[in-house]
Length: 285
Length: 134
Length: 133
Image (tube, rainbow over all chains, first blue to last red):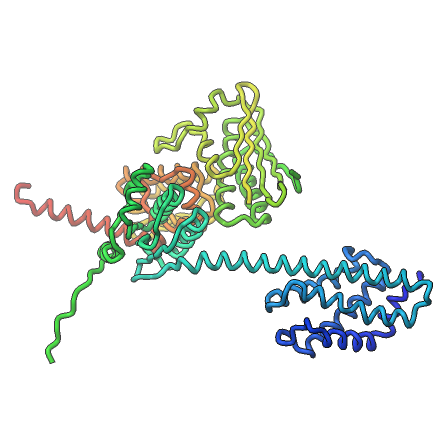
């Protein structure tokens, strides 16, 4: 069996002292975000990392990308991801890993003979550098995932489908529509039609400044799809400029009911579903 | 561009058309296409697989998972050794009228995918290649 | 040989398509429905496709044919429960299912059929009431 490297021996035999030294090092640093992570939690994470590092070193492999180091990567990955969500900077998790160097070098100096010290120090440095870089990659990816998810949520939130009455839903579109957003909204509308058992859907575009051919086509396709499913659509709030654009672009709104205002559209929808709005007669007291 | 995974299915009869649909569905699900995109893919596959069986005298469906840089796609190739299409332009134009007719449905299928290619000539069989990117 | 079951509900026939149909099965359904409309003197046909994840041009044509043949036999057809993804794909394909009425679900579909029948019997009464004959 190959002799364990000094680093490995150190990790196995002096873990408690190493942990203390490392904690002291981290707590002394001006960069530590004590507002975002408590000392107790930091100690726990440090201990976990040392344990995982020890196990990985025991495999004999120093290749940080290899399967033996998967648990270490997973652990650092989860630290990095949580920190990304908690508001740490990208460098903070990397700093967590790099701050281990000083205490490790100190211990190595005590245990390793002088002629081998250089080599051992280099090995430790390389491993920790790679792990540090790995954490920044994970951090980056987490941030990108958060942004993607927020974009999706923003698209859905900005166009809620509301139930106006039994069998009538409406989606008030607001802001500039692009092809992707319109598609999301329209698919959302069709699902809501099914969920609500709506036979009429009002698409109000009062809040939309301009419409291009693609968006107009999406609207028309949505109306056609809703009709195939058994629901009728009314488009309301078409501003004069949009009316002009539609005609100018040669888009044909055949068989699509349009109403100038949302209020008119609601009246039409109510009537077609068998309702009417009547004023209560005045009550004399 | 890489091919990450490939498979093929025979298209001999109408049962094979159903199996082809199911295969395309399962690949599309595995590649995490959106529900609408899955439906478009499977519908296009159904049209083209049926054409292969009915007009092409039977053939083969090749499925391939593509990777082109950051994007991934599903490629379907419908291959037959049948009579071939004489007038490809017209075949692409055939719409679906209520009268039915010999509409090969190629124009419609083309709208459901991103890339669409036909290679065909009388007496030389037909190969239709479609790709949908995620 | 497998067939899609057809249920009788009063004067209507109800078909629920739950399997991925191969072409022959669809054509068999077409034949079976036509026979049953006559046999049961049905005035309406409800075809529920809420479990169908795919409607291609062949199935579209079959649905259209069923609607047309039913009409000849004095019955109305309503297709119910089309899934949004299917509707979006049909629009993209350019299939509009002419002559096929649709409703969101079976309940709505039956209301539709009932309204049609009521309207029809109402006009018959008016006609009879006309003194000019």
